[in-house]
Each structure stands twice: as C-alpha cells, then as structure tokens.
Length: 184
Image 1 (tube, rainbow, N blue to C red):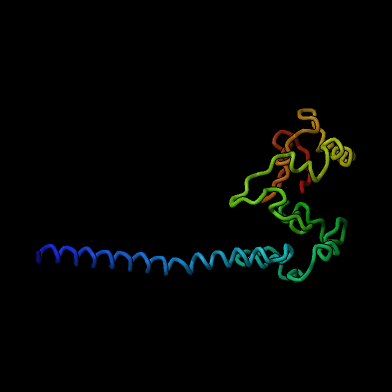
Image 2 (cartoon, rainbow, N blue to C red; image 1 turned 90 degrees about the vertical axis):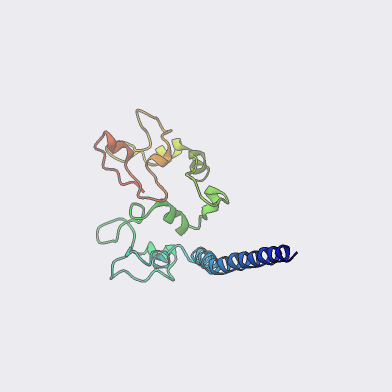
C-alpha cells in the first residue's frame, strides 16, 4: 500500500512540475508575440510617406532630404517632378507597392485579407489601371518603341514582368533588346 501511495505522489508531483514548466515557457513566450503584434500594428498605423517609420535600419533618404514623417504624397510632388533642376519622378525610384500606398491603395485592395500576400493576377492590375490597349495608346509616343505594344505579345504581356510591386521594377524587353525604358 505504501508503494502505491508513493507512486501516486510521484505522478502528482511530476504532473505539477510539467504544468509549471508549460506555464513558465508560455509566460516568457507571450511578450515576444505581443511585441511582434504591437510592432505590426504600429507599422500599420504609419503613413506611407513616413519612410523612416519602416526603414529605421536602412538609410533610404539622403541627409539633406526634407523630413517626410508628416508630408503627404502631394508634398513629395513639389520636388519630385520630371525635368532639369527637379528631383525627378518617384516612379522609378521606389517600388510600386510604395507608390500605391502613397496614393491611398491598401494592400488588401489587391491581395485580399491574407497572412502572406502572393503576386496578383494581371486582371487585378487592369481592374484599376484600365485595359492594356488603352494603356498602349497612352504610351504610343515613347521611343524607340511603345513598351506596351510588343511584336511578341501584343498588348497582353503580364504587367508583373516589368512592374514589380515589392522590388525594383525591370525592363523585361532589355533581356534581348536595347530599349532603355525607365520602368515605374
């Protein structure tokens, strides 16, 4: 009988130790999870034009650049316009996702509410930017060749092949041709 009671005490003691270990681990893990959630919430509250808000560890603006924290996109356009003596357009300087955010387009509008966004279909681009044939009309005077009319693809080349949203865009045609397009 004494052996049976000893076994029960050992089992109960082991169970208590196990529960304490689980509780302790979850107690210490919780602050990291809360901190990550708080950081994500804080970034979601940032304005798109607050470059330093997200890019704290990376220097994305020159030392003599004006502060952007409280400057809306229209403020950027005071300097960032094409032409000699101006800062030049932002279109080829920042990823498309940043331009969309500056114009008030939220990630969910293209990607939907998902944990890990995937590249969007071309039909999503066309839904806002219009038919590719109309776009080709707008860029008809670009030389040496209209980038939206291809002898290979017509006007139906997938937008994502040139216009990357989360990395620097590229001139897809330059893989074979020497067209020096500036791709936003």
